[in-house]
Length: 492
Ligand code: NAD
Image (cartoon, rainbow, N blue to C red; front, side, top):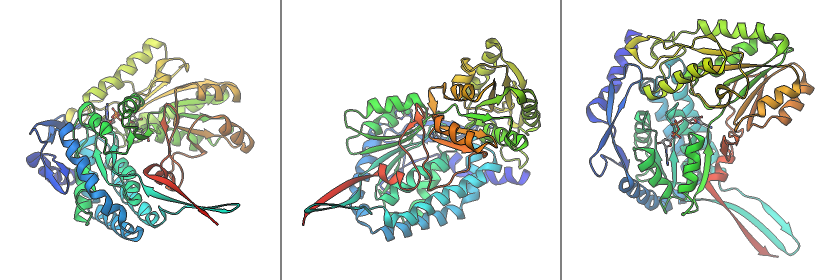
């Protein structure tokens, strides 16, 4: 642990002294008006760096650079792009430790998970590297006297806007397919955790990515983010963040008819029937809400348990929650680290107060933890005795907080599971295959795991229904977003 702290300090030194710059047309640069904002570490609330505060002028410059670089990048062969993306993946692997340590100190996410997240970022590039040669592939459609050939072409320069939770992994997930498709990009990372986005663009260019293909503008949502969504040269916005921000982006992008892809919030149910493997289900439920500090869009934040096993199962979960080690993100023992920012910590703690006032019971946690550095530590928390109409069961808390609700029948379980504005993910635990088929058919969610925690298969579609999103990532779905389909009909 001591060694980890020393390493982190060394990796962070460059940001402390040099700040976090924007990156436009291959050049690291300050904001055009010279302003900066501060980013702090959630571990000790001390400043990590001054960050370039980009605004509309910086976005304009970046969008123009992306536009200028687009024809040459789009014209590269799929094989050339494949080689380039693999080179980026190799470069990420070489700097995986640095990425993981910086991410931990910037976000409060633990090394236990961020070491894997850095490598997963490389995997995202490898996966889309291998798909790049097939990005333009289309179909042939026959008609009497006519042969139709479809092809796909990259849509143009695109904007990518990412949130503060696991920013490195999420950025790679959005950017790798855009580059594989032949798009150029302007990335606007979240203001709470901007450090690894800076590492990422630098890694890509050191690996040989041409100037202007990937541009980075830091700034706030209401200025840099808004300007990106309104820019006429930007043809599409890939956005990951809150549902209400998605609505704003849709309005902002209306005048320029922006194509949008939204990965938004969730209030995902894990439904446990009495016939499930209860030990496995309890482990998975605990993992899915408390890992990544609960700051995860697919976290299982509502625990729906069949009444006959409710008390036993909830006691198992409470016991496991109490045993979780909360601590410094770089301590190898730590499972739950500090929440991203004091503002977010206050929000999460306010839901604990709310739970009590709504009449739920706090069966585990429910307090702030005095952790190392005095940062934003909150104990893994379990509410029981809740109803689905309570705010703690309806609103995305985005912290290590789980709300348990009993159900009597399968129909009631389904009705509770679907009674939410969200529809991102669902987790079902039962040994009855017929029930699993029936239940998953009725469950309104973009992604459902049966007898499993969230295990991501990159070719499978990722995304939500209702207020959880528009569009799908993964496999070929990402190409559909970043590309236009063109049909050419030949008379025969
Ligand atoms: P957020 O919506 O507050 O911010 C996300 C990004 O949008 C940031 O970069 C922010 O600066 C920018 N932004 C804010 N206002 C903007 C505007 N008017 N125009 C353009 N950009 C703007 O989200 P957050 O708090 O950073 O992240 C947490 C949220 O992200 C949660 O709701 C979580 O569920 C969601 N999320 C979803 C997924 C998914 O795949 N569905 C994955 C991770 C996180």
